[in-house]
Image 1 (tube, one colour):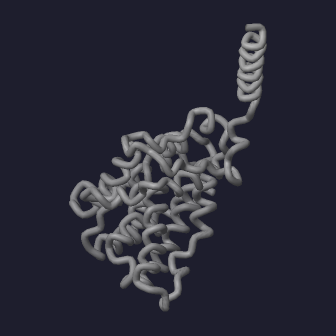
Image 2 (tube, rainbow, N blue to C red; image 1 turned 30 degrees about the horizontal axis):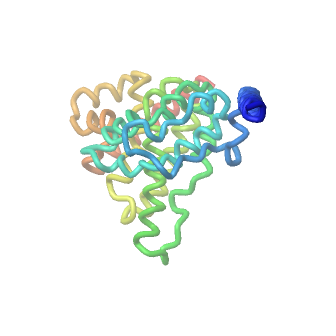
Image 3 (tube, rainbow, N blue to C red; image 1 turned 180 degrees about the horizontal axis):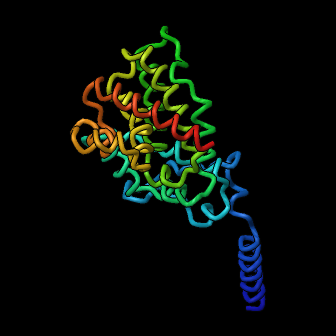
Length: 247
């Protein structure tokens, strides 16, 4: 009887000790190079891949961006009628993006990563599947950075930097149009169009109110024709001049 009591006491003390250790532990110590690792076992329900609140409180913005890009269900972006509807769907099932919008340095970190990306950084000798995976990653990232919850937080300098880089990506994608198509061009142009729209740039607003194609690009990240692309680029070049004068 005494032995059983001692054993019970030891178990209680060990459990209490483990509890104290867990309480004092930084949850982000378990991150992999600062990035949250998703469980390979989920029940498949909405939110099953959510980042724990304790991790959200300590993960860096850079680590959070990488975590969001590693979200296992990005494929669902392509299951809706438009890229924006697809993003809205995955956003409703995963808390990482909303957490990212809360970060004041999210724009700076995303733009920095965007600049490092090369839209033509694939080998034409790759298989169609390999090239497809590469271009899809570019499109997914641009869909992320094209979200208005991020764009409205940018400073004028960040807008200027992002507009310039999106223009660079547009030029590069034009060189590889056979691999990107209009769908792949759409988020690049939407970055441009949404920044100008949010600024209520008068010349662009005139076209927005009269052109359904411009409307669909801004609202849904959908590009129907190349003429729309040319118009957005023209407005962007003019708006960049306006921003440049403010610098």
